[in-house]
Length: 97
Image 1 (cartoon, rainbow, N blue to C red):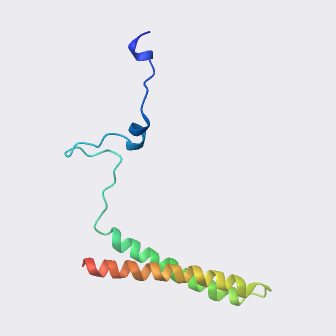
Image 2 (image 1 turned 180 degrees about the vertical axis):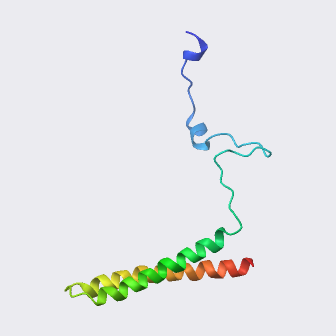
Image 3 (image 1 turned 90 degrees about the horizontal axis):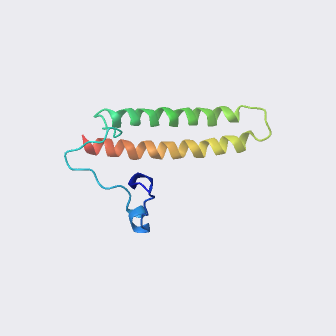
């Protein structure tokens, strides 16, 4: 059988290790290099999402649905998580500057 038709046997240790590391000077084509403004953009996005969630939590209380407070509470929890995420990002961004 020709050499190209033979199946290669790979040990389980080689599978777990993954591909060989690239050389120090080589840059892979699929790798994305982060920009300087990336932190500020993510910070603004977190603020917008948190504000939107708080607004939705408030508007859920104005509905006439019997479950309005349940939905408002769930949205307030989501808004709280986004607000905490925003605060953590803001601290990290301020430390970097």
